Length: 136
Image (cartoon, rainbow, N blue to C red; front, side, top):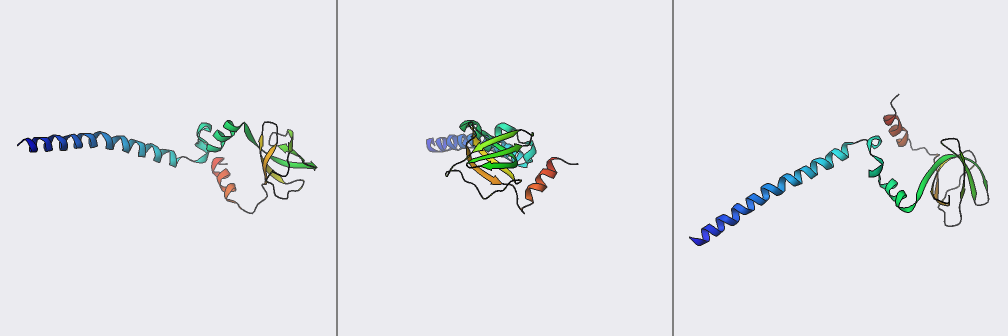
């Protein structure tokens, strides 16, 4: 008789714990699904992984038109119209880029370029995303 009471108590305890645990898990799943449904335009800056990494490493991204180069220096007119100089060396990851190309550079606070990428591409997936963010 004692065994049946112990078995009953432990099974009741398991049911109680599952009753508490499952709703907590369901709320986590619901929150994750809500986050996944957001468009890239709605993601707050604090949740963007690249921005978080940039903040941690004191780095930022510069995008714009390559105006000229002089040795290891790249001169870029950024999206606000400001001219910015970037320094590169043999460690900088960069493709062959030419004057007039639109580029994106990942730089530190001293404008040393960690990598430079040309935005000249035949891939139009990013065009679609920008149209979704700025309906016109």
